[in-house]
Amino acid sequence: DTEYDVFLGPVDAATKPNGQPGNSYTFQVMVQNIGNDVDQYSLEVEGETLPIDTDWSPSLSAYSTPPEMAVDSKYNFNVTVQAPSNAATGSYRFLVTATSQNDATVTESLYLTVRIPTLFNVDITANKESVNSEYSNSTGSPRIAYFDLDVYNKGSADDDSITLKVKT
Image (cartoon, rainbow, N blue to C red; front, top):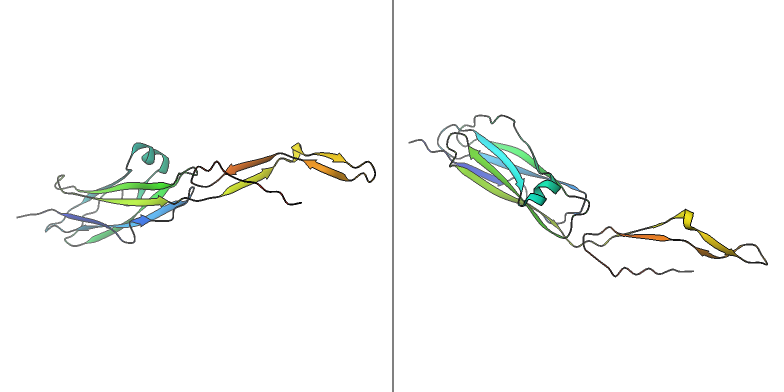
């Protein structure tokens, strides 16, 4: 009797534990024919939810036409995801699926995960057009300078308690 079967697994880790917003992540995955006859497999990847699928743009670097795979043969491919620059702290999962072309009921799935830990990062810029000074009458040098600072939370967590200190 002909049996079609498939194995799908990560070549390296299935989780990237220290992701950062704005970075790209690549997972190497292997599909293997573990049936007892030649088979072909279609491959798909999608985000666990529609917003993840849309925002992270998961993609496969695999064949466009599934090759015939002999019994026990393996094929490695890459799954790449792009963390949005505003990715918040959390775990983002991507579902990879391999389906037999000879028997559509034969399918194997694998979750790949990128974790964005809580990251703290602040960007401070000064707007040079906003500089305003008061000058000393005796020396003519600036005595007090005023300027606007723009403070941006560039981390992965909401933080409304950023403290600025000025040393003189």
